[in-house]
Length: 222
Image (cartoon, rainbow, N blue to C red; front, side):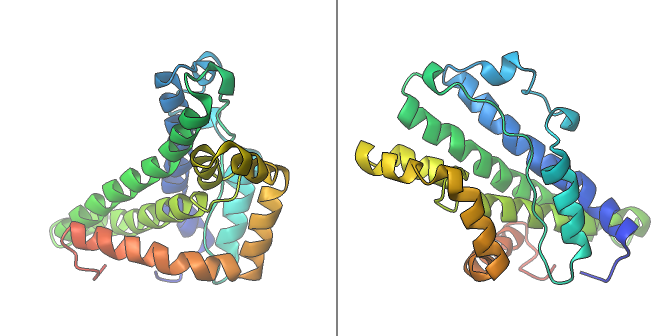
């Protein structure tokens, strides 16, 4: 991507980041409601209004700081949607399904942005004034959603991948993995800051990016 000024970066990334984080959380709450837990609905969190989901640090400060860092990648988080574990019909299994809903929503959004990227390419000649901003925003939308999807699938609780794995493991092993949760974010941040986790995740993100571009007929050229 070109070397944009900070205001340009914010204009390009703001909507993709807000949608990626907001829909991710709503997906958790929506699936939980389908499985018997109405906690998120009763607390007014089953809404696409980003103001209901914004975390001042994870949704604003961290993404903004990442935009200022050279060579970094953008990520963030929203306020977690509350889930009443005991309200679920089969808590252990259903919690894994609820957790998987977030990354799946990011994959679907990445596919949607890929379609918009294809549209922007088609509009580049007749409507360049509209196509160019859409092109860069669509690239940002694909990137942030793939980053959130793959990062959240890391099998360390409280990330979604950790909750999915907890739901799949036998009770004893699940309890052992769950004991990591209070330290999970510290572990993930340490791995990210060291560069180890990013070196593992980057090829996977690039693979999904190429697959999406091929899917919309861009052949990895965008």
